[in-house]
Image: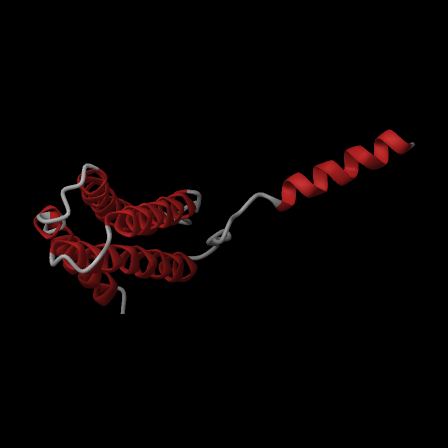
Length: 149
């Protein structure tokens, strides 16, 4: 019986490590709410990296701080994308919404990665130029959010 108790405790402990911020979407309205949260979280990461890139390019941020901060935002965006990807769209209308947001998230992810790579290579002076495509990502995410209202 001791082994069984240990197995149950280990199983419960491991299941507690699973991190899902987003639950199922049973209706289109639920899916819209989850899409909104995803887009808002992605927008936050995009804007944070834009600020970091501008600050670093102006010579007002240390390289190690910039590198770590951008990497953290990239990790956050990856988590947001993963969480959203795990949500089952409830209907075909939601499939269209998913495709639209997936494209925006993919673009932001690619551009954010380019900024991280440049920062790690020590290209802080021109980091704002590398981050310039994030402005379009920000605009697109804002337009997506406005379209949901």
